[in-house]
Length: 295
Image (cartoon, rainbow, N blue to C red; front, top):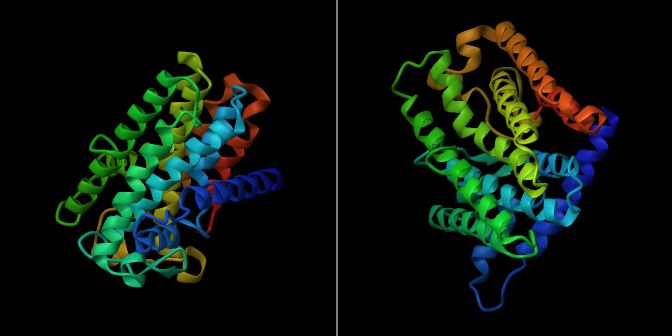
């Protein structure tokens, strides 16, 4: 686990530098939007999604700069989603990553625009030749990122999550919701590495299957943290879903049942990596990390 911690820290540091560069203000553009984008993007987060890009790409000998740019673009999408998710019209949260949410620190209109800007910047980064010299690879990265972040992925999941406030959901419903809302970007993190590395269909399928299970295990751990965690650990409000009466993995399975389910799914995720032998050891350790984390 110490190797994983070091690798996560290394990736987080590298991604931070990349994001700082990408979010350098342009003198011809209103600076306040850059201030808002930088406020919500820099200096926080596990950078798990870029880490998955980097580690999956490393399986195929992909250049680190290609992986970092793709991972940074994915992180921009993730940060945009958090900004919009925190808005009063959505989850109405005041705290994110241990500090005031963007609409609280600035204002709602600026938060909406900053989220929009992060979203579009992500596709600008992916489309640039620096991300990959092969235009067909870049097109596929753009296509899959649009799918993962749009109505067939994260946005569709968020819509289902809003509807869950007034609907009774079963375990199958919750699983599908979270595969879209949380899992789609995690899946992209692994699939992007396969795209960059021009992986075989078998290798790509193995990474997608791993990521699908990893995303579910991650979300179950999130649901457990909402019940068992505290603001100091998580950096955000806790027990919101429970207080709102929303169905979660924990509300359906119970705390012990949810924990056993997370462990089982994480173990299943690891099994998908057999084809990559020892090269995937950090990805294997990540499956253990996501269910043991405290934030």
